[in-house]
Length: 237
Image 1 (cartoon, rainbow, N blue to C red):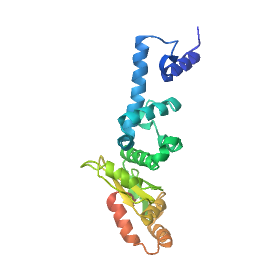
Image 2 (image 1 turned 90 degrees about the vertical axis):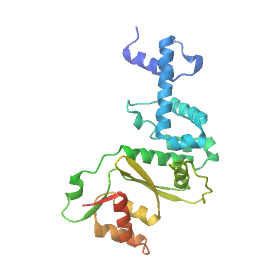
Image 3 (image 1 turned 135 degrees about the vertical axis):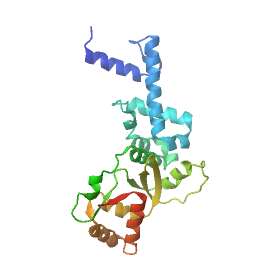
Image 4 (image 1 turned 90 degrees about the horizontal axis):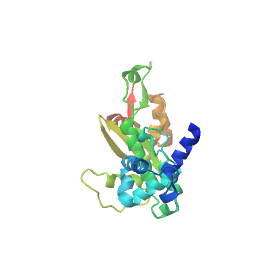
């Protein structure tokens, strides 16, 4: 009789095998479990990457998700964690050369999800320093992208329906903030992105302002600070 580890390896291989490759676990119950496992992984990815799903279509997304699952099966029962590296995986697929923005849109979907699931700010975060400092809100997520991915993302996540666009092909920067249970995506400029980078660790306001002013002497740093505080991206202690 095989030991438990060997049985588990064989079972996992059978779950991920295709078509008639399954030989050791032939039963109706196993077939149901196998199909349920595949569907669960696909739907977890679809929920995590809804904009990618919109862009490629339901049928294509299902095929892509199954391909990804074969290479990277779930390793945790927490399905919201599944697919963290899907954007990088997409960037390696030859067919995405026809959709060069797709991996970046996937990264935006992941940032949205991380913002939605992040912890709330604690009162201690706001008052534990002796001098006024700024820091990122725990739910703030931001990034820089070499494609107009944020414009494409926003057009597809518009609450009034998909908006037709012809985006200018240029790099973009994006910020996600959360108020209550609502995550909002913002298209930001380079100076705002630099400000957020400066706040990655708690820093004195004057040091943060000086860092941004050196990099962007024409930017209005006080206005940037007000905008980021109002959006919930940063906290002033």
